[in-house]
Length: 600
Ligand SMILES: *[C@@H]1O[C@H](CO)[C@@H](O)[C@H](O)[C@H]1NC(C)=O
Ligand SMILES: *[C@@H]1O[C@H](CO)[C@@H](O)[C@H](O)[C@H]1NC(C)=O
Ligand SMILES: *[C@@H]1O[C@H](CO)[C@@H](O)[C@H](O)[C@H]1NC(C)=O
Ligand SMILES: *[C@@H]1O[C@H](CO)[C@@H](O)[C@H](O)[C@H]1NC(C)=O
Ligand SMILES: *[C@@H]1O[C@H](CO)[C@@H](O)[C@H](O)[C@H]1NC(C)=O
Ligand SMILES: *[C@@H]1O[C@H](CO)[C@@H](O)[C@H](O)[C@H]1NC(C)=O
Ligand SMILES: *[C@@H]1O[C@H](CO)[C@@H](O)[C@H](O)[C@H]1NC(C)=O
Ligand SMILES: *[C@@H]1O[C@H](CO)[C@@H](O)[C@H](O)[C@H]1NC(C)=O
Ligand SMILES: *[C@@H]1O[C@H](CO)[C@@H](O)[C@H](O)[C@H]1NC(C)=O
Ligand SMILES: *[C@@H]1O[C@H](CO)[C@@H](O)[C@H](O)[C@H]1NC(C)=O
Ligand SMILES: [Cu+2]
Image (cartoon, rainbow, N blue to C red):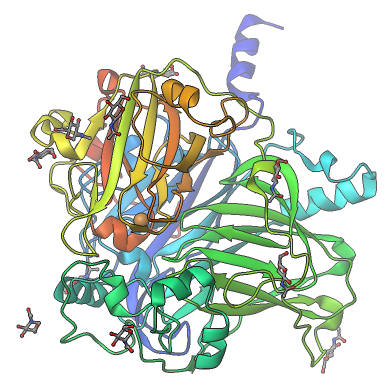
């Protein structure tokens, strides 16, 4: 081959063909009734949740956002590494200026890793007004998958591979009848963390269900009973406001109906997942988007978890899978049951609230059946409803293939989580991170600003390894799903007790064997701290700084992020990139504004 041809081939005949794919998202603020109750919500291209963005690994992705809402906005692509494109990470004050009403912004990033992701607002609390939608990055054809660990039967394998190509997102979210700004006003006027929802949604569909008090009481866990004392969960299944105060001052005058109590039933659509048993298998990407963790199950159908946060894991069977906000669990489901309609269930996995949503898994050859199979694996209270319900054992779902993190750690950073005077307001380490951090002057554009805000930022040199030790101190600590923007971290360990070590290596010497895993730990972009009462828990996240830029580390429960539970990671300050002029000064378009229907 001529040298010139070889060079051309090296460029064009990559292991996977690089192409550019274009999307446009038009955002509107308009009335809708996802759970049967009408209020204003955010729609994307007229839809809620937003349209699924499906691309191939290696694709360059361009997403033109048209903000037709009355509020400024940004969009974050959750789990996408943003290697070399930190200006497309969508965090106001860190990576960009917000997109004003009526304006556009062009996000550009490379889909460098296969798997399940999602996009959502990162401006104010617009995510809870509905601004979210799924992303799937298809793995390269013929790439290694863990499917051969499920079956060695070639026909079965082909069916699983086909299901993989047709994977479908299932987004679980919490929904409120107050808008996000009304909820925030309520938190501030009452002083309270208003953690309860009016309904749970499955792919944006659901109902506000008023469960009889006796049924709520019967599903109250022993831990909740101890917290409740002589009170009960409210009629919306919510812990009462005085408990939500966590011992901080609160004022119930002006508390709107329906926030802690006040159930008003309303009926929306029910999500229906139509499956063809001739396909033998179905594949779903379960995604936690809401403020409560969610336990998902399909009556009579065991699932096999094959990927978590987009990355393959050793296939692990489970009747029920729990996920926190920001986490993704991809599952394969065998369609070998009698043709019927099977109930799918999402119940709260948090002590904060007893609440549920249901949908249907419908075999195509049972579309006209009038009855529905109703045999839950999981109770309304989130515990086993059968003698042998199998909850996912996370320690079996090790990354496939496993990867060991470095043991050469440049920095160990202890980050305490605590309340800051009110139950809605939070500290991550020394400070409460402002949701509207200097939006006109993003940290990425001028990292030296960080020196004036030392408590809001931590920085490192590119290439180094960092241990983040997260330790919630509140006497009653819910699980905080910690999400890191840009590349993933290793979850090297967790446990109970006050952290009093200068390094993880020291802790490993002092703590019981099995506290840490340095061999094949989970590789994630979101992972919850240990929920605890009395004794504080700790969670150790290890990552390598590989992508210079300003990235947020935060709790993915939106109310906690709003309350300040965040820090800016200035990764690779020694190698911060030159921000392209079209992002530093403009909206990323660079020149003329593109028109929908042309490229986008
Ligand atoms: C949206 O804008 C309205 C009107 O300016 C304001 O009252 C509200 O707080 C804003 N909401 C959010 C979520 O930014
Ligand atoms: C709960 O019990 C305590 C003492 O046991 C009592 O003082 C309090 O009034 C009771 N509260 C309610 C709501 O019954
Ligand atoms: C509670 O809030 C109301 C109205 O917002 C206010 O009038 C009242 O003084 C507050 N009470 C206390 C004890 O702060
Ligand atoms: C379901 O009923 C409709 C009309 O009632 C019929 O057209 C359709 O073929 C039926 N589907 C199946 C799978 O039986
Ligand atoms: C749930 O599991 C426990 C412990 O294995 C068992 O005792 C209990 O009977 C189970 N619950 C049901 C409803 O089967
Ligand atoms: C989970 O899996 C690990 C590793 O296989 C095992 O040691 C542990 O006993 C399992 N836990 C439960 C609750 O089954
Ligand atoms: C930063 O944190 C330290 C230690 O808690 C505190 O003394 C200091 O006031 C904080 N500085 C700012 C600017 O918040
Ligand atoms: C928090 O404050 C302490 C004491 O001033 C300081 O040592 C630590 O570096 C601060 N943490 C951050 C993340 O700024
Ligand atoms: C940062 O470090 C990573 C890992 O060592 C390396 O791949 C990358 O090229 C570095 N980037 C810069 C800008 O130095
Ligand atoms: C931490 O350990 C050191 C050395 O063992 C000890 O001096 C110190 O008092 C401990 N601090 C806490 C808060 O337990
Ligand atoms: Cu949190």
